[in-house]
Image (cartoon, rainbow, N blue to C red; front, side, top):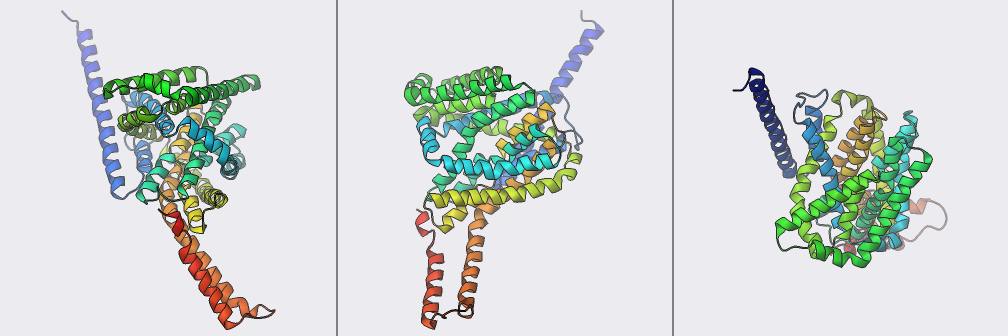
Length: 440
């Protein structure tokens, strides 16, 4: 016969399990409804997920209790799946080709967009480690949001789109170097240990790329299965094991998952992508909620102005990056502006990087600033992708018309009326026709 203590303990466990199911079920249901709401207005759901985390986290409307630990594990899986799916999008040969042809654009992208974040952290007095972290937050564009925007606007076949994708690929590759550096800095290891960590990361990435290029077909054949269940279990199991080993080596679980995705190709990559997409969406949403849970809403207003300034500056530097890269690739004016506007959105990578700093506790205000920054640009990104080109063309058209009108009064030999008319007509015709070849 059970004692009263055993009965009470069993009742308490049952109650705790019931509360967990209700809490976690409410989170998933709420995320689904928020996703549907965002989809109706063709917006990214990421800002809504972050807001949901703010509402149910520290200082929020209704803090969570029993389900928070499970949400933390789900968030870690979400990061791993985000990077795995990103790696599945590219083959090793594509990555090597992009490195050879587009690395100048990658260097310009890093210089223009990482430096403002580092400068802001130093101006706020947060120190060099926080500067490196915030540099990564402002540097990396959101591949997920940008891919969705390109599809929604029907630009996947445009001539400037490969330029945009090349910059995103180079940013993703840079994470294989950047994340181990950040991890070592946040852990407070010395120069020797940090150098060893970076050497291991670079060596691992190089070996995986080499193996993927030479033996990718054999690896894919080994993983391949006609049974979707077996394919899902094998790919997910391999990814989690490699991510765990990478984290044990202080490389980064996210980088390990990314390299697994690169190593798979062909039908295996396509099959794994379709099977894992729902899991990625689920756990990625949980990850964004988890980040919001650890951000006190009361801490955002004090950093809102720096976040807004940083958002404006880095939106302009991203537009400049895309414009320069597209011009270098021979794209006409309209395509250059479209490329620049498309790159503005920040999202999952920025939150991943900021999440590392929040976990390490290096600067209490960094998480709130990153949250506000991402909220601003993940909303502004689709708008800049849509309107940067028409606004730039309108401004350019007005400038040309102003020069044409002011020409005869500027001194020197005035042009004839017929020549001025022909020049103005030619300018307008060029503006109307630019970018026509960029579309398919």
